[in-house]
Length: 252
Image 1: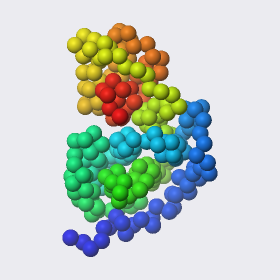
Image 2: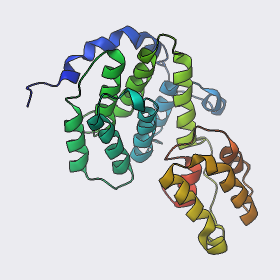
Image 3: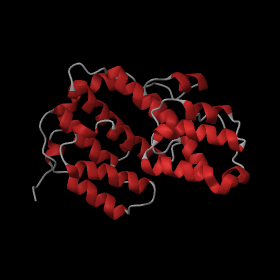
Image 4: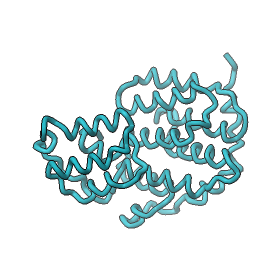
């Protein structure tokens, strides 16, 4: 086995694109509800969640995974993709710490050719890291995924990549300025558990195009919360960790 990771040796290459990311760093952790709802960069949003202790590790991990999946075709090899997949399973309690560590080790020697591939490979390493060994892995994964998209094409719209990450954060964390709606057991039991069965199928199959169907089903069962119904009807992006699916399925 090589004595040092080829990925680790290339870390200095990210500096060329760092300016875009760094210019969004905030000097204050203050954020209003309106700012959260309209912000189109993930950095201040992540900082707000961190500092308010509203960033449960599972949701942070799934956010990082979603960022990686947006640059899926840029990953240099299958070990990198498997590390992302293992991180996703780990977030939901379906992979052990040992499996996560092994997947990260396997991804560490990916063949590197160009800055886009290097950035994507780094994202695979950070998304599969543990808090004890890599503080801020969620920030780092979003950053490297952003760089991968930016480097992949000279015509890439850096604002669009950043905006999409912000939309993913809102899909996963909802509105942290409001309490989550209450869920009545009668709704979950409606028609032999139709609602949680549908939500679980959407989650398992990544069938997020069925979210409007979920909205219709919720309404039929008597759910009237405007935020839930509106979110289900939005075009997305929707990802694993979506706050409405988590609410229905009892996930945190």
